[in-house]
Length: 91
Image (cartoon, rainbow, N blue to C red; front, side, top):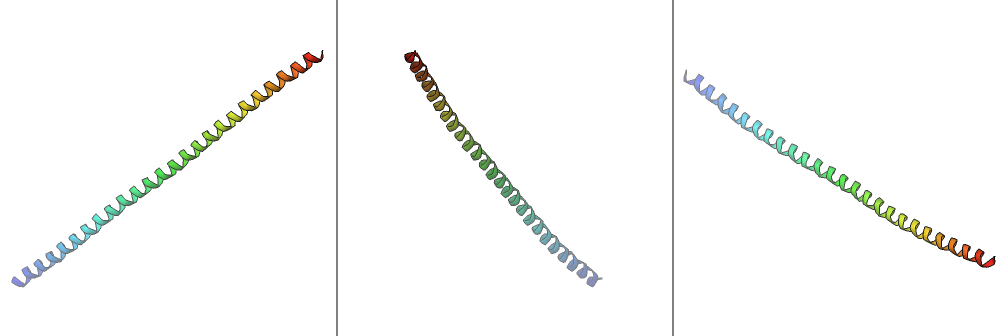
């Protein structure tokens, strides 16, 4: 009877060690999963920043183009005014 009890106690000790080991593995897995989620969020944020930078560059380019367009319109208006003055002077 004592041998059976000792055997049972040994099995319980092995079972407790096994459970402890599995709990540690589960905890390690959860930590790794959280780190992976954090890394994925960082990667997504980096992609969002790249997109925003692209939009910023596009807006800057658009502003430059609008400025160039306005400059050309002003030059054409001045040229048109001069042409009208030349025609008026010729008549």
